[in-house]
Length: 268
Image (cartoon, rainbow, N blue to C red):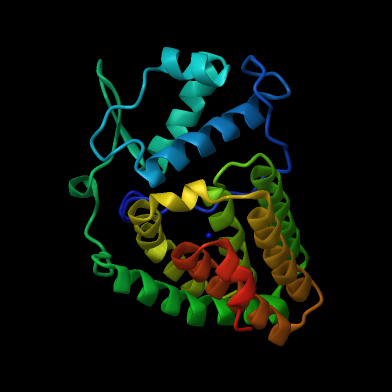
């Protein structure tokens, strides 16, 4: 599954996904053709570390110089990636000290009770199953040319990010947000924004998820997203709802049971 200051941590604002591919690892200068891709790749890598718990809440991120050296990018590219994380409330900056991962105390009051146990993770998926399946149906029925173009752009961006092996959390949420937006009912979109931090919490509670992104698993996730996009594009409302439901059920199984269960235990 982007995000105003009054929302909980991780509520990321909708941004139009770009079609640029992610840079490999070469040093690039700001303003060059590959600078946006390098920034996006660094952003995804740092976000993945935050969500996986490699950078704990309240911990200080490595300095700009260290990050530039590690990822083989220029310091302006590092600053752009950090600014994006800061804008989306994943980190906070302290003058003269550096960037720090935000803590729960930094967050605005949650509109839903925070996730506190594994059962809450399962309930979150159950909620998503109902809301997002219906959102996909509405997207198939109601989308116009502009909404479909935005959805295709979000899908292309997600494909490019996943192809690099990055976590792709922000790109995934942009795709799901684009589905909700295509339905024309703002309440679905606003609901996804509200539960974004809860899904982020799921990721933090299960850091092993980041270590199970095998090529086969990535291919299955890509196929699930493609099925959703194709059904919406052909105005197959029932098919779009089914495709979204299968995707969410499979995502839940991948988290709790791993890759094999997502293949052999699929219920739909």
